Length: 63
Image (cartoon, rainbow, N blue to C red; front, side):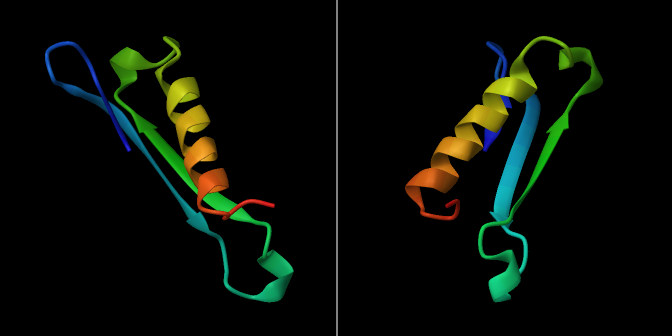
């Protein structure tokens, strides 16, 4: 999932997936967010996180 500014420049991206396939980790999701330093503190990361949480919920990755 990428976030782009009005000029089409990539500001950052987020990924997510199951942490481990073992039963003990069935409700564990690993996520990563990477942002260009000049876009930090502007809410971009927060919006990326909200988006990947919603996507994970729709894919039944979260409890």
